[in-house]
Amino acid sequence: MSSNDYVQYLTERFVRYLETPREERKMRRKDRQRNRWSRVWFGDLLFGLHMFWQNRKNRRKRNVIR
Image (tube, rainbow, N blue to C red; front, side, top):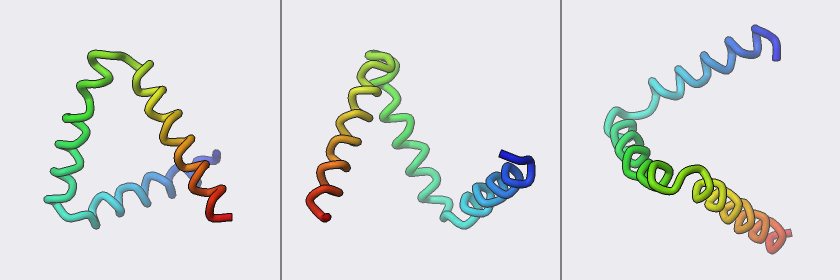
């Protein structure tokens, strides 16, 4: 990744942040804080299983659509 790509990526992220309404940003922050307890108490194992399960569901949906 070149430095120009990185600057473009950061700019896009910043603009997207500014375009989202303030209330939505607050709600997302609260959701992240609420979902944090599982990683604190169960570590990355539970988080990894959750990611695996979501990926599995998404793959099944894509296969049904095709």
